[in-house]
Length: 348
Image 1: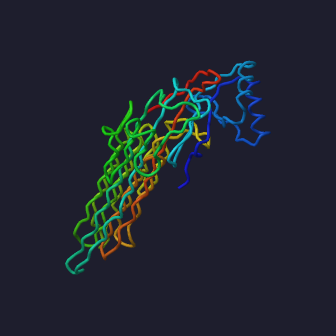
Image 2: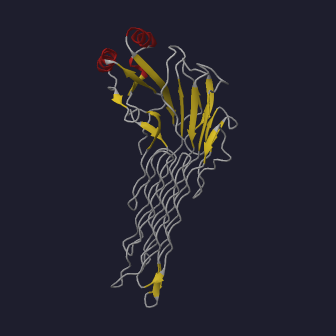
Image 3: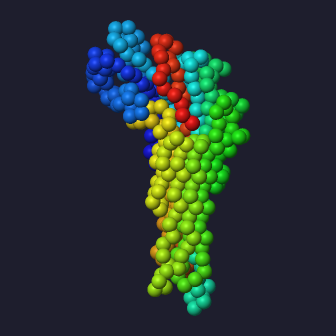
C-alpha cells in the first residue's frame, strides 16, 4: 500500500489575500511545486513550505495580509530525525500512532463424511489498532539537533520511551493507552471476534471479525456472523464484521472485505490532505464453496486488518487475513523565525 505522506517533508497552512496568494501560486508554477490546495476543514490553504525561502516568507508577511499556520513534518521510518532549523521549543506538539496488527486466515471447513454432515470453519478475529500518544512544547532538544525515534513496525517512540511512546496492537487487542507515555494517550480499537463455523448440511463458514481502528479512541471492529445452513444443500453467505473507525480518523471498512479509510485528524501531507488514524479493514465473508473471502486491509495509520472468512464444507480453505498499517510520527510547530500565529490544533 502506498503511504499518504512523504518522509520528512514540511507543509504549511496559510490564509492570505489575493495579492499574497497570487505570489505563492506563481512561485509554485515557476519552481515546480504542487499548487496550493484548500483545506476543507479550516478553509486555509496548504502548500509545500519550501516553495519560498524564509526571506521571501518574511517579506511577504511584511507587505501583505497573510497568516501562516503550523509547519508539519511526518516520519514513517528511521532511527533518528533532525529538528527543523526554525523549530520552536515553546510552541510545538509531537504525536505518535503505534502500528496495527494484521489478521489471520479463516479456518478451513471439515467434511469427515458427507453422509453425516460437514463442519464449516470459524472466521478469523480482526487485528487491533495502534494506540496514540502526544506531548506539547518539547524542549529537551532544540532546532537543528538530532532526536532518536522508532517508527514503522511496533511501538512509536520519540526521543525515548519515557518521553513519548504509543504502543502497537497485539493480535486482536488494540495498543494499550494506559501503558503508553505522553500528556495525551489513548487505546486503539480491538479487533472483532470471528464468527463460528457450524455443523450441518453444506454450511457456510463464519465471517471474519473487523479490524480495530487506530490512533486512540479507535472503535472496535464488529464481530463476524456465524456460519449458516441454506436451502438446496448450499449454505447462505455469512457476512464479515465491519471494521472499526480510527480515532477521529478514517472510517472502517463496511462491505465484507472492504478496506479501511486513511485517517484525517493531523496536519497536511504530501497530497495536501490531512493524515491520522486509519480505520480497520472489514472481515471477510464466510462462504459455502470456492474458498472464503479475504479480510480487508486497514487504512493508514495504525489500523488493524480484517479477519479472513471461515471455509465452508467440502474442506474449503478460509480466506486470508487483511493487512494492518504501520505507525506514524508527526511533529508540528509555530516557526520561531517569523513569529507566526497558528490556527491549527491536534485532535485525538
